Length: 403
Image 1 (cartoon, rainbow, N blue to C red):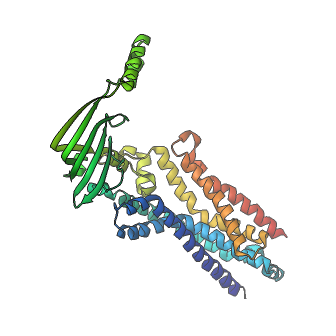
Image 2 (image 1 turned 30 degrees about the horizontal axis):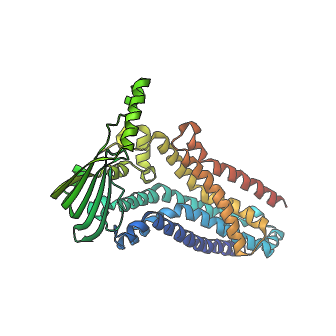
């Protein structure tokens, strides 16, 4: 008789889990699309076909969050309904302990944790790495960066705007070149009827060469600017004279030089984009890479790649293992909360799952926020949710069992 109930309970939890995981995954995937790709899709930088590939890689990665959360929601709903309909009381009166009644859920929780371990250590890192390749796809075709009717501010030391684009030619092009890559002083202004882009070997040169045709160039002279180190080395009198000279230069009518050219080459650096892509994301590293990096961080610095810090890798390694236990821990807590709530309404179950899930994941994310602060021991913080919720679930379960 009890095997029939085991199958019934397992079926109820599995069906509710699948429904919850589907809904939560759709929300997370859509959120990632709006966050990372919507602007590039609207501006034409990426084709619509990329969205399908993006969804294909984002969905498996989202399962590390949605499977534990979905199982928590399912357990809350199923046990809330069993408790509200007095089915649990009937089972207890037949001589069955609460531990025996919940055995199918414990088994499903362990299976879910095994699935999450595989997702966290294998599937999610691969998916993160592939998603990053998609978002960095513009580096393979730098011309796709230069879209019409859009201010381009992703390039080092340049602001570029083109009114229109016909084939490879940009029409009515306007460019502001800053005095240096880190400063904010505009030094050169270009107004060209049209311009073309010669990418060449971008991976080697890390730049694109723009050729401006029928171009008006305005060059503004600025007073020589000292570096912060040079300013610090000045005495009081020298610093006062320097500051007065800088102030006078800013207040005076700018000294500009203009020139009209039939054709002007303008090299544009892509270092900012390459620097962003060169840093290895710890979330996209395999477990083997994490173990290698923890032993020898320099071993990951291949082809100019910038590996994460030791603290980041140690925190991520522990987070993946700790996070894998979420299915079992949240299922354990969900049993007690579901029975205590005694609600058959779906809305109440969802609200409870949101409250418990947000609390659990917020504590996990706290360790991620501090992953660059080794003094705060972030690798231990990621275990805190399992300890706290495990103790809470055990205390509540023992109390219910003694009733």
